Image 1: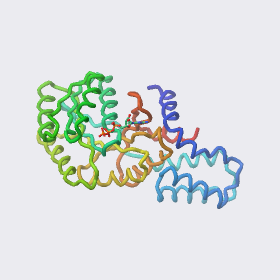
Image 2: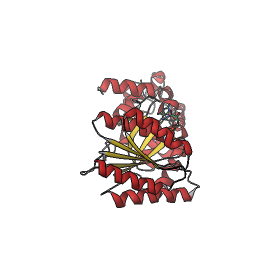
Image 3: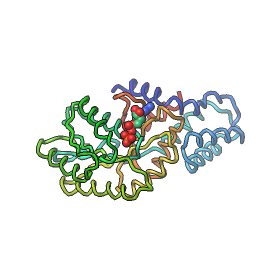
Image 4: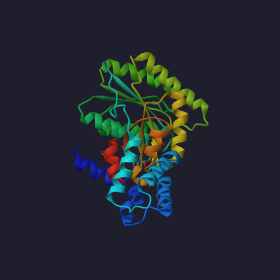
Length: 301
Ligand SMILES: Nc1nc2c(ncn2[C@@H]2O[C@H](COP(=O)(O)OP(=O)(O)OP(=O)(O)O)[C@@H](O)[C@H]2O)c(=O)[nH]1
């Protein structure tokens, strides 16, 4: 997508957070304690996180005390946010040298997992790849049906088990089919789980184990789907999942529905996971690769 188109899509999707960050409306104000308090409150409200907020406010205090807020200060705040988002790791998804590349997708119910898998499948399909979906959420009866609808729409193949079947055995069958058919990518959907349900965590570890045994280097990414509207709670979920299954990246959904867009900074700073994709709407094109520059620019329109 052209840079301009991407920026527009980000802007539209992030407009709620951008309303909080309307520093332009503060132009002409003196940078005094009341200004710094306002800035702090906005950053906290946007769920940037306490530590990162403090760092930004301190840096603004050092550089701008008793000056007047202007474009220069705005650019300074943007640069501070970008610095907090710098990530040396590649933003793109890992690709295995041999077929199939396996992506394991996890996240609590309602986080936007199924929708994100559908959007990801469509994206990879558009790149000319063949996709196999594995419906390993056998816990929730409707999950496989939902995934089947999306598989049909994106023209992807799907492996599913009977309701209540062992998810690890579905994963096993999916690996066999992906290998037999030479699929480029195997995307594995898993049950949504709450961190209090340790048996479900163990189940996820079991699925991971099957993928690892069946396919060289798999899973090549373990992507955690987090709902941005949960703000700091999403961070706590991420800590639990990462401990259990070693996530490699985050898909942060529903940024369009929240002013808590600052949670992107918290994900990077608190749990040290790269945000790989962000969801900025319900449409099939609304899963976008995360780009720190475009993200920050979209917050200050
Ligand atoms: N506005 C908006 N809605 C989204 C986004 N991603 C997902 N949704 C919506 O969130 C709701 C839940 O999404 P699902 O994909 O069903 O969530 P899930 O995690 O698979 O949940 P279960 O199927 O219950 O396990 C749906 O109504 C989606 O359309 C997004 O980026 N923006």
